[in-house]
Amino acid sequence: MSAASRQDFEARLRQIGEDRYHDKHPFHDLLHSGGCTPDQVRAWVINRYYYQSRIPMKDAAFMSRVEDPALRRAWRSRIEDHDGTADREGGIARWLRLAEAVGLDPDYVASGEGIMASTRFAVDAYVRFVRDATMLEAVASSLTELFAPKIHADRITGLLKNYDFANENSLAYFKNRLKEAPKDVAFGLAYVLDHADTAEKQDAAAAALTFKTDVLWSQLDALYSGYVAPARIPPGAWQPDQGLLAERAA
Image 1: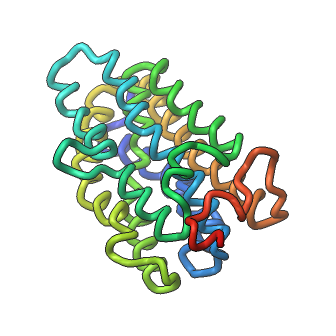
Image 2: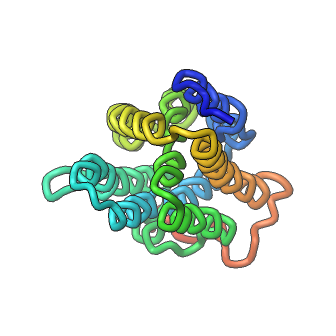
């Protein structure tokens, strides 16, 4: 079987996002429409922090296998975007500003306490995948970034419209990703299209992207089950009276 054309293969990748990206999950409908309670928003912020905090670790694991200096240079900015630099705040710090805005103690959130086991399993599986899979599959798994700008734009609009905590400061993470993500998307997509030059490699890359959509979707499934319906918080997960700022806990 011969490989699909570059154009057809890109269309196949984009269709995966159209069918499976987590912007279609009912939790995001609830969040963006203003339907979440303050505690549901907090549970989302806490659990999503674990994913955010592991992104630079995932990228570092990938870079540890890269022998090409040019590829390492291109990939390095992803770590800096999340960790920051000596003179520039990163995405993790911006996420902790969001945590504080919704009434959580940033130190509590950063500690990793209260993270759902399902969140840990999903995110850790992603880090292992990027560490152990082929280079092509590892890069392909990052291509959910193709679909992220829409969800960030919808989230900014929805949160600003529906929640008192939402402002330029608290939503800085999403606003910055609208500027940072396009370079990552352009590089990652070009890499996958260049290197998936057989039908087998195209299948592997598509499967890697599908896996990543499953990672994102499964996190929201667990969150919805624990805090929305049936609202059965699993053992060890965050309880609504935990980790609040002192003035909220008083």
